[in-house]
Image 1 (cartoon, rainbow, N blue to C red):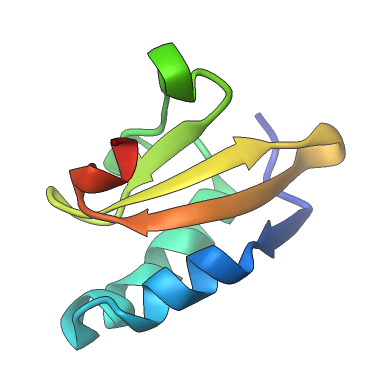
Image 2: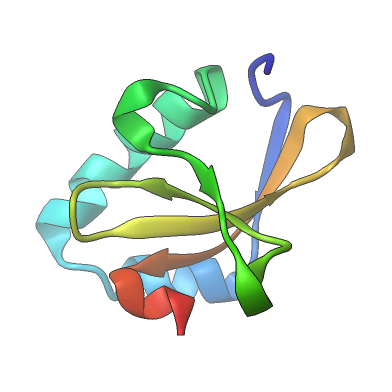
Length: 89
């Protein structure tokens, strides 16, 4: 997949980002940049979710934190949530 041409984030994503620990907040911009350049970079573990969240995808910030997103047309994405695995509930 080519790089992401445009990214959007929901107000909920922004709120959740502000509540993350500061050390995680420092990592997030680098991971998002990596994702937008190469959405399936091996270090991100990008994968489609199943069940009730089947319309979403996820990629890793680290072993504990994830970003929940959806691909749109024209290589665009929307970031919906960020947090621990609890975002899948």
